[in-house]
Image (cartoon, rainbow over all chains, first blue to last red; front, side, top):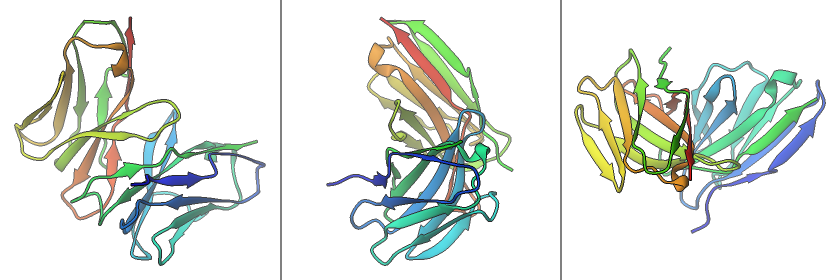
Length: 114
Length: 112
């Protein structure tokens, strides 16, 4: 079966701009989580969506937001980009959440803010 | 805040040697997972350990969950160049949150 697809793979944006990243989970999976990976902070949890509802949220500012559509595809948006937002953004797809089912990660979107 | 500290942060060893990576926390987790991530890819799940004291083997990799479910170790026997990568532990909390708390990571390089 097809894996988790994240688009785009690479992005370069300017400070102050906004960006939208997309994640298509594995067919049948209803939970999508987003993580930010940086060399200094490692992998940090952003938020998790299940059946179009945000079920969990990490400790990121309100500039980071997301949504999930009825087909389980998810988008995350970052507004007013800062240099520190440069990172690899990963999404993870699970059937119903990480507590009970295996997480499959996409290849990530590499965001560079200049 | 739950933190998972991994050690060592970097490890470079010769092919054929053995190694152990540690993952420690002051918090209790309901389960703990180990992932390997290669450049340009997302993390891939290697194993999930659930019971305190549990030991799981995956070919040359042995994973152990501490008795108190606060720590874990990954032992690789006779390391091979294909084992090179970033190893991440990740804890799943007792408290209902559907999130993975990742460790700080161990970057392993196996020299042929």
